[in-house]
Amino acid sequence: MSFLALMVLIVYESRWVYPEIQAYFSQTGNLTGQQLATRSRAYLQDAQSELLIDQPAQAALDAAIINIELAYGLFDVHVYRRQYECTEPGLVSLNRVLAGLALREFDRVAVVDELFAPIQCLTHIEMHQLDQRGAAINNFSESTRQHNQVLTYSSLLIFVMGLVFWWLHERQLRRTDRATQDTFEWMQRAMRDPLTGVGNRSALHQDVLAKQHQSLGLILVDIDYFKQYNDAYGHPQGDTLLRQLATLIGKTLNDEAQLYRLGGDEFAALIFCPDTETLKSYCRQLIEGVRKANFAHPAHSDKKDVTLSVGGSCFVADEATFPYAYEAADKALYRVKTAGRDGWQVTEGA
Image 1 (tube, helix red, strand yellow):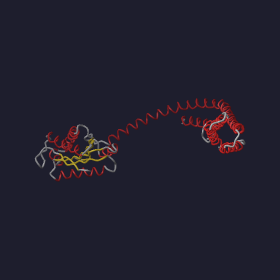
Image 2 (tube, helix red, strand yellow):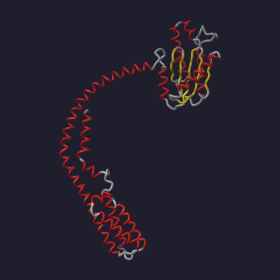
Image 3 (tube, rainbow, N blue to C red):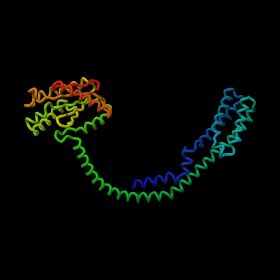
Image 4 (cartoon, rainbow, N blue to C red):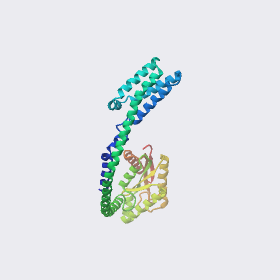
């Protein structure tokens, strides 16, 4: 509130207290400022100098004509026509001079003398605009003396109010920080699988969106015959296996992958993947890493230790492409299961 009040004061001072400064010292609405009249007068004076050269050469005469035409262009401005009565006669004089020079029917002294009238008009325009600027400066100085006191005392009042509001704000901010921290911690828990500590399905989706336009690989992992494992060892031992496998998968992928538990015995891994061959290498490492771990599985249908079925696909991260990548990896995983489990497949061009 104190900041808003201070901004209102500043806007008031700059917008309403100094209108003359805006009118005469900015280029807004004043495209024909003093500089146009000054340049036009300088061109006419240069033309006079060229014409006063003893027996002027053709180059000097052409230069004089160009200078007069340039002066005419800067002089022929709507603002000058509207505000200064001498503008129209001055332009008529310049037209007359240009016509005479074009026909080579002129008296140098007479032409130079006729240019004095437009020069005098331009000088009058310059002086008048200088007077306007001087009046604006005087008004500015007078209004400044009055409004500086208002601005000073108001700023002090706003400063005191700001201190009060700051204290109230800090007190409320501490409360908000505590509430925000509680919310953040809750959101973090909501994005994590409570059993294994890895991300969940929502975290997978958010991480894909956070890696827009990156080339990624999606790996889906199922534990073969996990239900039979639970039946043989019990659910506590099954939970232990899930935690052990989550750790093993992370280490096998050199901690480069982000790991997620999608539910039950299904895991997913998201990893940077420049090409399909890289993804195949990761899938092969997973299968070999679990085989080397030798997790006992007394109820495995093929009389093996714990094995995995792995399916993967490469894709460019995007909200639209992710569902297709997930479907492709899931189809690869299904083909592995159909073929007897304990293996991996990658869908090409997913």
